[in-house]
Image (cartoon, rainbow, N blue to C red; front, side):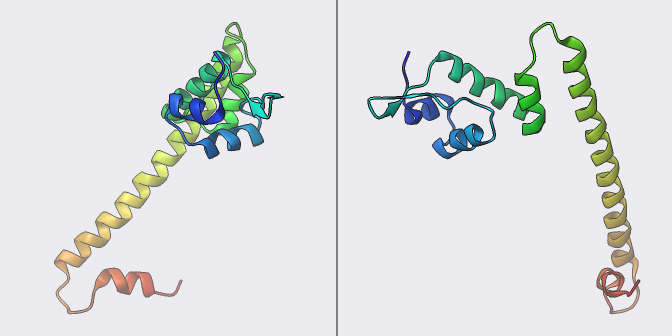
Length: 128
């Protein structure tokens, strides 16, 4: 199977510029030119599918790049990448819970305030 970049993009339901970006950062190979065209193969299609599935699972491109270098037998290294991602997700969840609590408190203050001034804006304008 020989695909041009446009056909590859269509087959993977992504933008041509996304493929070019992945090439620039080393996620996917840049094929040799043949008769002024670059042809992609089944392996390129599989690599793009791998990237999309990993992105859908919440992995970052640098983590995906690392996973692409590993073999099926490299379970320990794969597990380390996933454990690090989970740790970062847990940190982000904590940050988001803190933000949610702050906004909820502001909203409660706004609902129960007895003066005409907006307590949310007062809090935001308060100098620290």
